Length: 125
Figure 1 (cartoon, rainbow, N blue to C red):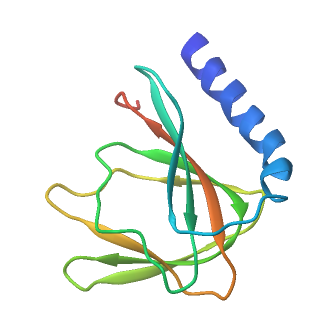
Figure 2 (figure 1 turned 45 degrees about the vertical axis):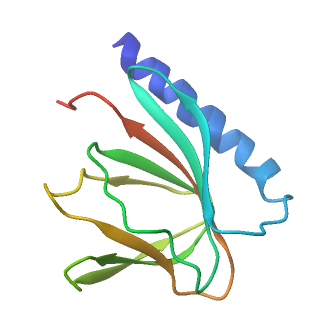
């Protein structure tokens, strides 16, 4: 129960600080590490239109908090894709990626997308 309370506290703090992030000017696609311990890894991802993140994978499930929402195309290395609609201020659950797969995040909108990612480092039950 304490582990879950800590994660909830972290997520609440991220949601509260989201308003401050909106005032910053976004100039490039990329990741910015925020926090890491044995339980979670947290980073901020910014994806500009027509400037995808490189191929990568997620070994663990994660929560995405949309600081600036938009339409994100998840393009698998195989060519399969799906579009996620992320609303500003909302949180979303994403499972770990299937073994031996990689994908790119492509902003298919006309404005930058900015998300805080909280990746759980331990198995979720």
